[in-house]
Length: 88
Image (cartoon, rainbow, N blue to C red):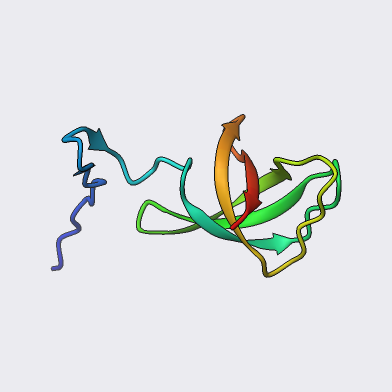
């Protein structure tokens, strides 16, 4: 009978020797899956925890529209499933 193995996130170290976790969102590059209209929420996919997850997203510039398919940089995180992004 096969045994299941629990996989735990593996931390890695930055060039400064500080431990960083794979679940950190700020600084990750993702792509827009639902257009972000000026001042409104859209949706992005961001690589995290060994896969990709969707997050609600606002543009860092409230006047900017970021269309579906654009690459974005996560610059901040609000609530658990909402991020602030800018074009990358």
